[in-house]
Length: 233
Ligand code: 1GP
Image (cartoon, rainbow, N blue to C red; front, side, top):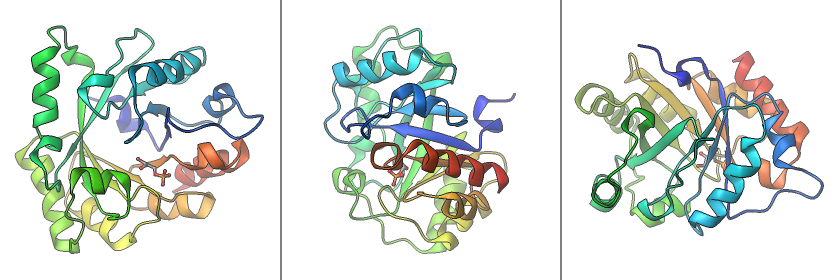
């Protein structure tokens, strides 16, 4: 069975808690050639700010996914292709591995299983909000990262493994280790991708390069360059 992300090279992640640069619209960002938009962030998420970004992007022709940070911000919208839900494999707190998910399933009796897919995160930048919030153990060797990737794919059946360096450009050898651990699953990489070269570099190891902050503090042209880098890798 094929999944949409089998064909992706690039994802743009829009954070509803952050502004867009002056003069840039959600439409401009949707038209950069990215393969999909993920709407999500770690802090400051509300159903209202999530909905506003989803509605702004829904008018444009790009697959749209929500990445809900917690069960309280899940948006029920036909504009969404689906939900990409983080589970943090190296979290220190079990809340971010299965408990948040249990709460979502408990309170939402209409959960749309066919449109819901987990992302098995391996969080590696200890300074990032996501690392602090989830109390992630970021002190991992290449062997650890490769093993986590195998655990995600082979033991937990995860379709997507996500090496997350949010806010900083990661260590290539650790992204490569994650790739070595996978046979079928799609490897996402995110963190500090800000130009053609950084997208190309991580695109050598990961199937999908995720770009976040650049959408909020760069320009449309810079985002477009990262699309080119990911596509050429
Ligand atoms: C964040 O992986 C994404 O969840 C992208 O990271 O914001 O550093 O581009 P950046």
